Length: 330
Image 1 (cartoon, rainbow, N blue to C red):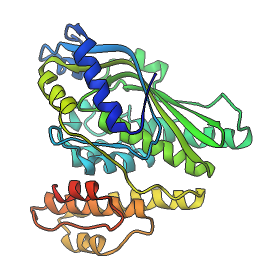
Image 2: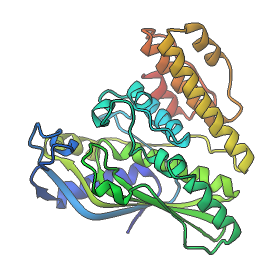
Image 3: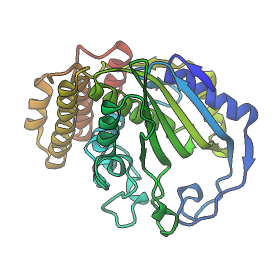
Image 4: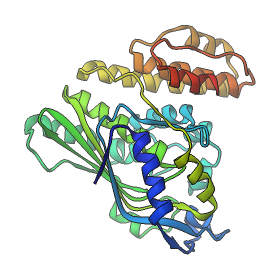
């Protein structure tokens, strides 16, 4: 398995491996699958089977490319939505067009990773963390996303993630994400961000340092019409970006996550109501944790853009220069 210092290095290397050694596969035909544009298009693709990578420092969770700019508000919105265990479609749709096309009922996304891991059948992440706390050598530490019923439903929702596993070794928490399918160009930056931040959160709940992050994909792929973009990302400049670490005690980490969740919901609801006064209050009030404060700056700046204000940019002194540049460019 290839090992990298940052997610950015893992990302670009994976793209190059597909470009140089991927196999051509004809289009999926299933009308329930985005891989066929829900039965509307031919979408042949290039893939690697059983692709894996390891990132030494999961705090280096952003790959910043001028050829394919990362949607940082979507990263934070997806993280808040997932850590809160929700499956409403309106939250991701606030940040990214097209979310509703994955929903069977136009209201929910039952395959949402956080919903499956935290709320649909009980808090699996919490249960695994507690099992490790009681018995640090434990191996019964797999939290499931995919369910047997997914193989029998005719649905647009079939989660790309199978599940996650954690191991406490040498006082550091390793995390493995298992994907049945990973779109390697446009989706991996968001899946990687989400699961690396969940990794850090779980480590903080145990009061330990995060160890290596491991990402395993049954099929690792991008589409033929994305080949030139993939080459531009792989060959062009790319910057490894990091966020402030989550607080390293369980209580403080939970408080930071609560700040993130509350800020995301409050800012999004202010946009829906056209309430600029509420946005101004969020913009003027620093969050308690540096991590949540960077999220506040990003989410409020994006909210101003949603309401037609292209000039107001909210700053957070805790943001690294490359992250501040992403926020300014919204």
